[in-house]
Amino acid sequence: MYGVGREQADAFWQVLRGKLLRLGLPAAPERLSWPDDLAQHWRREDLLLSQTCGYPLVSSLPQVQLIGTYHYRVEGCDGPNYRSWLVVRAGDSGERLADFRGRTVAYNSTDSQSGYNGLRALIAPLAQDGKFFGAAIASGAHYQSLKLIRSGQADIAAIDSISMELLRRAQPQALEGLKIIGRTAAVPGLPLITAAGTPPEQVDILRAGARAMLDEAVSDRLLIGDFSLVPRSAYQIITVLEQQAAAQGVTAL
Image 1 (cartoon, rainbow, N blue to C red):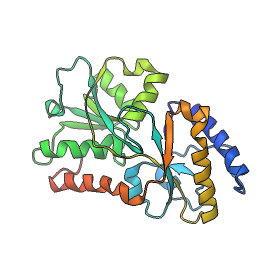
Image 2: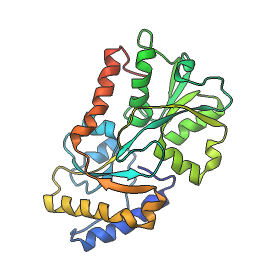
Image 3: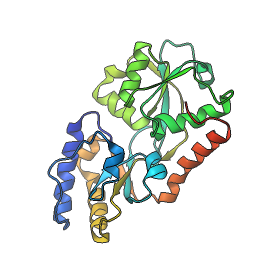
Image 4: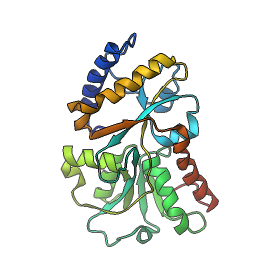
């Protein structure tokens, strides 16, 4: 789910695929698939390997097996944990979240921890009658949220720190005229998953292959620095954040 262009992810997969086959995996697709319906994709009974967000993991994917979580060499990340930056226009007079009461927020999707759930938890203590922002726009992607801010159609968005750094390196012009005014709580990063029916020996191969990618140039370009198996229980902090917001009357941005 990271990489400004598909080329980076495709190159990563080609190296990983070779390692998996050498480790004894019976077969692996030659090419990555890029499904339009991610929720359906993650539930496939023949899912070999994918990366998902922590929010759908805890809310709708109880059946998948965790392979592990990459650590990223990015400011805002600590071990397997990551956070989002609160991004606004550089010329905006607002300097803290409270200054954006009644303004327009952009978010990538409602099932996103980085762009939605994390921000919802932040606005909950500031909300009045369950509302803080004046309007919310679904952008479909973090980079689209940034476009909406730059164009003046939105005023603020929560953008995950890894996406921000990858975009800064690949397309620095996309971040021109923007500033960071805050950050969300840290939570475990985006895990690699496989189907419930993937045999244990193949799960071991997938973990070994993912870990073996750490010294590869294609991983360095994706800012990957380490790999660990984060237990599913650690992701429950995402559910806790959602429940805390709901307890304060906030169920949406």
